Picture 1 (tube, rainbow, N blue to C red):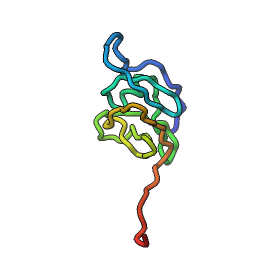
Picture 2: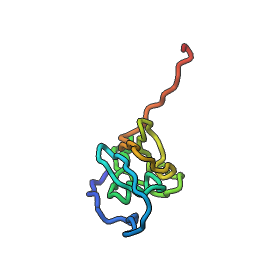
Picture 3: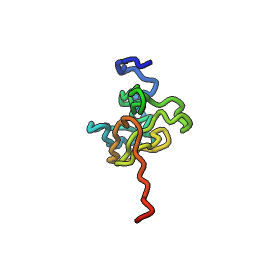
Length: 114
């Protein structure tokens, strides 16, 4: 069953005030975000208020990270042009370009014909 939900600005992943540390710049769906260096892409996006990371291929239902340890595959996003990346297992890097993943990612399989 597909239900529409509004994204909430309340999160368990809130950056600590005055935590120090360096901020780096990433881009999510064209929006520039300043996030703490050394965190996962999933954590950085959640701290920035992002609640929907991808849509399922069958129903289009919104999905977001669930396990945060690489088991559930709910956190898939496109990172620097590569779809199907697990954002919970990928550390943010300066200038990284991240996009929501809508549906299934295509497979790039080289043909036997060369």
